[in-house]
Length: 88
Figure 1: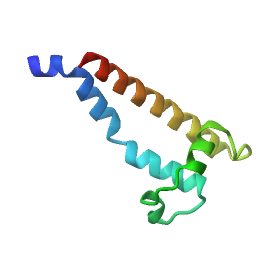
Figure 2 (figure 1 turned 180 degrees about the horizontal axis):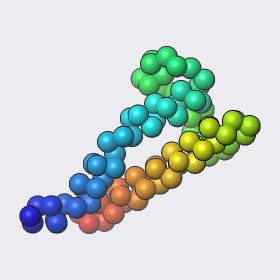
Figure 3 (figure 1 turned 135 degrees about the horizontal axis):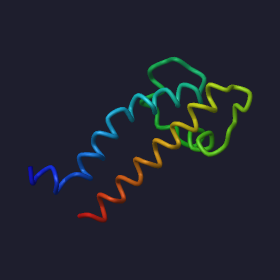
């Protein structure tokens, strides 16, 4: 039980990070407008970061909604990482 209490931030960080691959893949497919799986392994970040902080597909409601969700998800993920680093 002590292990869980001492490592609660690490456990939360890992659990919150599990769906990251799926969300990132979905976001990249929207940004690069492709359904091909190779977009997940290509190291192209400039366009992805630009689209993350600017609403480039303003008329696409599904993109805007998912972009806001993904940005929120990444903010929580970053906060968990910071809290974990502070704790250790």
